[in-house]
Amino acid sequence: MADDAAALNQGMEARGLTYPMPDAPAPGVAVEVARGVFWLRFALPFQLNHVNVYVLRDGDGWTVVDTGLRTPDAVAAWEAALAGPLEARSIHRLICTHMHPDHIGLAGWLCARSGAPLLMSRLEYVTARMLMAEGGDAPEDGERYYRAAGWSEAQIDRWRADYGGFAKGVSPMPRSYLRLSDEDVIQIDGDDWTVVVGSGHSPEHVCLWRRSDDVFIAGDQILPRISSNISVWPTEPEADPLGDWMDSLEKLRDLLPEGAFVLPAHGEPFHGVHARLDALNRGHEVA
Image 1 (cartoon, rainbow, N blue to C red):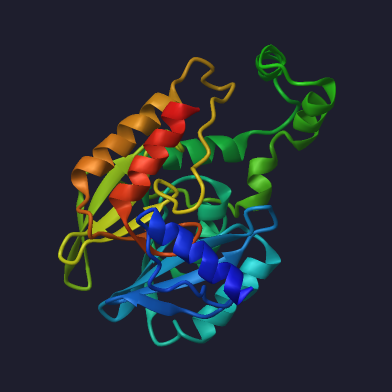
Image 2: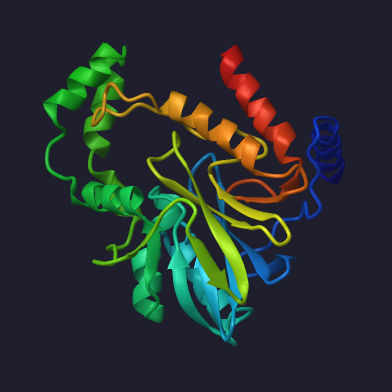
């Protein structure tokens, strides 16, 4: 396995990406990856089997970025972290990059446990609350949409059976939040973190950039080994998320310096953001 990892890293280096910390933290362990920034990893019960969470030292407390999915394993890992490496400080605030369940799944649980406020962009918060309320029978317009897209009867039957499943992986959301908008500046432990909003993968995805040393918490907006999921949903059948995504790639390419240290939600922290953005752009143009 070590030889496989070394070969993979060599391949990434050849494409302009380097991984200064290739070993992921074990459950309940926090690894400092940049000044005052700690990396935790939580298991997911999917093919994409993990999500990264970042915890920022914030005076006498912590600012947490993302939470993991609501599962017993994730709750146990949080309990271990809160009783271990994070024990000495309380959680001051929780920032969620976007509304997908692996990022907000334990937001309500963690806010209730700590008393910390939730910070999100408006579209991400409102969309999450809307999806939490979905239930009952699968809608006919959704079925028409998927039939037009070429789905088989078996695929549509699975969709019907799973309809309303968003709430299964998400604890009840806080009934209020603090809004984050593009170019907002948040002060955390005396440092300015700039909010950078992207779209395409989700409606109003929040990233955080510490300009003083170019640490960039990317969420799912920039991933090192895979491309973010870009999908059109039946709730907005004529949307152009791929166009939004490509615009966001261009925005980030212009904004971020080549030396930025990217902390993604999946995979490992890496250097080489321009090479990665160029590769993502090429991949979608070729496809």
